[in-house]
Picture (cartoon, rainbow, N blue to C red):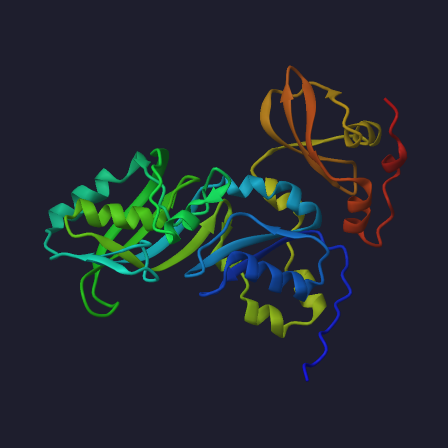
Amino acid sequence: MNAPRTRVQRRPVHGVLLLDKPFGLSSNQALQRAKWLLRAEKAGHTGTLDPLATGVLPLCFGAATKFSQLHLEADKTYEATARLGVKTSTGDAEGAVVSERVVQFTAEDLCRVQSQFTGSIQQIPPMYSALKRDGKALYEYAREGIEIERAPRDIVIHQLSIRETSDVGPGRALKIAATVSKGTYIRTLGEDIGEALGCGAHLTALRRTATGDFDVSQCVTLETLEAMVEEERNALLLPTESLVAGHSRVTLGAEDAARFLSGLRRRGTWADAAEVAVFGPEPSTFLGSAHILANELIPGRLLNPIEIQQILSNAPVPHFFCETTS
């Protein structure tokens, strides 16, 4: 007889949890476990990590889910290990071996390849990816043995370090550290580096160490999270505005804050800015994102008064909540 499932009383949770995703779990599986532990009503993540990858996975709860797209666009830093001389169907250790070649290169070759893959380059997305074609993910076609033509994408490898390593078992291997723009596939980068060295390669390990301003040193593991009581878990949540830490900041008075929250533009003496984080009066309350054009503050994604009240918890609700006249 199966034991009855524990029923969790969900609650409004707002903020960002920096998770060190474990090996073997999909990003959604990791998200669902954290969501259950926090008893959160609404959650999402800021871009997937492969099940075989570990590292920084920002999880967004409640109001923070409105701004998760910002970290899909952020630069990311990875550390990877690539085994040389062996190419697999998936570009990583999960796939079947499709070819094996002799590994032979010099230190000068390694320097040349590092330079070749640094800066603005083009990359063809892998078949084993979640990109869609005619409403179907590419990896679904790949599992059926169907190869789909993919157009190369423009990406930027901001920083790249490649060195040979001998501490990962039999065969020759490379340690790769890279800071890259959005849309970069590290599995494909590893494969392309192997091809440029004339021997092929596949990834045997991948770890994301940073995304945007978030670093792996700030992250918590699921095991640690599970060992905590709820108050300790709550204390780990970063505020929603941490997702817009790099934006210009504008603080509005009570009257303008109320009108801005209702979606109305505000006029002021601000300089043009593409990305703005907007706050209400003291106590400083995050209202949402905007941009400024020709001295107008134009609303983007906004919190609603209920979300703000929940974030402030037991603090008095700012009086500008009720003022919505134009």
